[in-house]
Image (tube, rainbow, N blue to C red; front, side):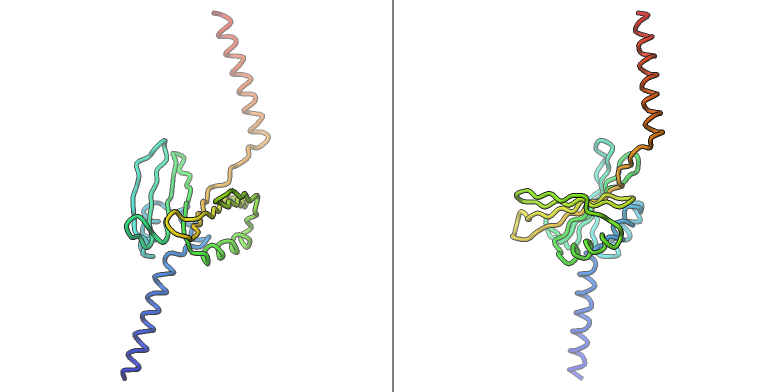
Length: 190
């Protein structure tokens, strides 16, 4: 009987620890879905995964930020997540973790999801890789932490910058031409 209780205890403990650790790991699909969620829905989703709401910052230059932390103790956390939105309601996701397994899974998913590595830059303390697919731009940074000998990984996901079409370029050029003619007319009569 005691053996069954001990085994049950260890199984329950393992399950609780596993579930707790899985809460911090956000997959590529989850990060992309968080970009589409309202702040309220994102907060609910992350709260269900044991992420703690940290702050909703007042807009600065039209950009609002909301942040969460996982496993926060004082100013240190296992993982951080921030969603930034501008006046156009375009969102940038910034996810920071030290979990190498999460990053390796994310890199594998990038290839499977059609992301292509555009460039990788190396500096003294940082590796920065830029990935694109048809819709998104993803930046992956690796750099040492300030407080110990580990590496932190920062993932930023934003909408891919859209190139204007040829007709949009022609319309903009025509508008500039007409504006400069109008400006010249107004100033020549003075």
